[in-house]
Image (cartoon, rainbow, N blue to C red):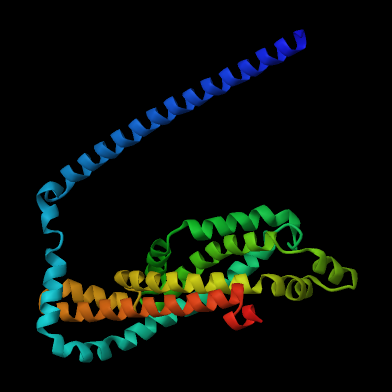
Length: 293
């Protein structure tokens, strides 16, 4: 009877401790929420005061610029086909930048992933080093890398390609290493037992397991890189972004060209997104015919 009483008292004490801890967490969470809201409000007020015009006075004119662009584009709708043809080479340049950056970044990400995965790394003691390299590559925004490279190499598509490739290598290196963690090490051990070198073990024992996921992530990154290459064009890296910056900077009179560039970019991103989605689904799940069989 005494043991039952002691056990009941222990359960009550544990329940009380748990309820007390839950209350403390709620109080701390409420305090943090209040601090966050206060900081956001103070930051918004400071930013609004430093703007050329008050946000409260200008928010109702937020659609004025898109309306001007669409109005002029509609008035010059007959010039749309000619504008699409004119800027199509810039679209090809943007796609080339994204494709080359994705290819180089995928190779770099594969190397970083293999070198930073336990059981696969050629130099296990350097795993933390390669992980930090991957972190640095994806931590620095592409536009920062591109600005530095443009200062060194000059404007053009090459700095954009290098900048996007560096960021892609870091991002894919992280994703690929997570895929590697789920790969079986038995094929690697079997190949090592028959005298295979490191490259043979990776090519024959690892890549066949992780290849579909690698390609799936690379296709997803290709979509992201198309948008990134268009954005980098605004800093002089070529492609559609460069043409769009010129058209928007010129102002009225060339808004029809800006609308044509927006249309090209939108249609391209949607098409690539749909195509890569189908390819990723087939790589990771197989075709519908294969699944039915």
